[in-house]
Length: 112
Length: 112
Image (cartoon, rainbow over all chains, first blue to last red; front, top):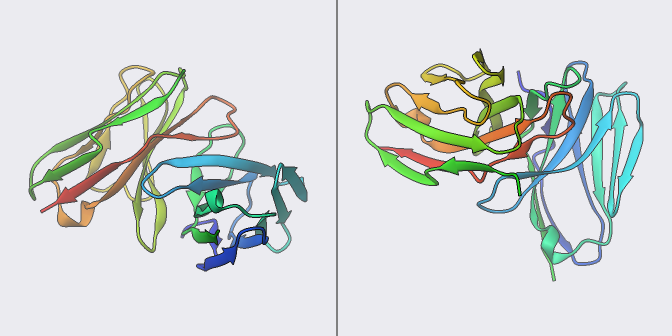
């Protein structure tokens, strides 16, 4: 079974609004990562949160992790048209080797 | 700048043919990975390697093989291409103790 399964939502929002997407996973993890994929491109790492952390910020990104519920959320504040992309969460079971299990992704469209 | 490159970017092949997809990274990362991306499945791990002469099967390894003769390259071979292997293939690398994976631009493979 695949870890890191997002709610399979397609989100369409206006520029300036916040975008929130969720991810759930099934087994214990060392860390959870979020990646962005623009159409036709490779994935780009956004942020990592470790299993002993509850919240992390990076610029306009805020990620939360609830290990008791095995879930995470990614919030993008003040969205821009350039944020239009697919967003994936991925889990790593152990530190260091980065063998990731990806979810199905959330497609976000930001309307200018 | 260091990078990870995949070739070819697009390939059409016939059922039954052997196909090799190339992946080359210049970061000197020990860890390298091959994923396939299909609609409705997200990214699934095919094979991975933690160093020269080390290869491991991922969750969808049947019909695929890899070899690691140096640090920079991890070619992916489809022994006898099948239509079910039509997909977008991504190579990724990460350093030992790495906290993020770096992805190539992807290879779109069509098996007809």
